[in-house]
Length: 171
Image 1 (tube, helix red, strand yellow):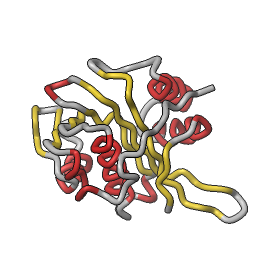
Image 2 (cartoon, rainbow, N blue to C red; image 1 turned 90 degrees about the vertical axis):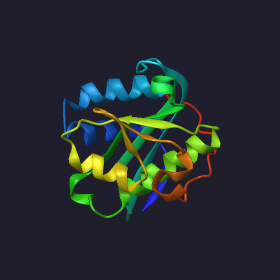
Image 3 (cartoon, helix red, strand yellow; image 1 turned 135 degrees about the vertical axis):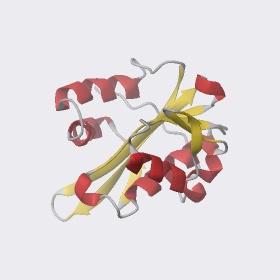
Image 4 (cartoon, rainbow, N blue to C red; image 1 turned 180 degrees about the vertical axis):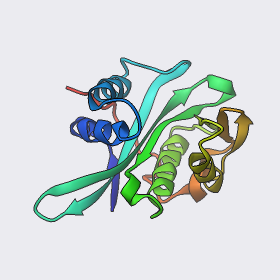
């Protein structure tokens, strides 16, 4: 498995993966493309953002996208960063992909000088809450969890060490 920065060409695959849980592919293509290009932003989001994909190399077919994560700088709740989305294909869950994605984003945040990172997660979403807790987050508010130090996101990870990821565009 390879974890790499997302590219504009990945947006349709990211949208397809996200749409398996909620909404349509078209909805997510627009939303993810807008977010990554900086045209659409969550409340209190700042321009710097990153996205990474987890892909499995398939002989003669290129790679199969099995997960992705995205995050950005923010000022929400006194945090410096926010995990926006994470998705792993249902059939690939339980193999550590989500933890590796969280670690990669944590490495990016750390490289950007970002320390405190929050994530919006429904109280009833126990699988996500367990993942974030395993990766070092703690409850902040009923719908929010926080990492007080991005370096601890899934043990600090083996990520890119925070290399600068340029804005991804959907063109």
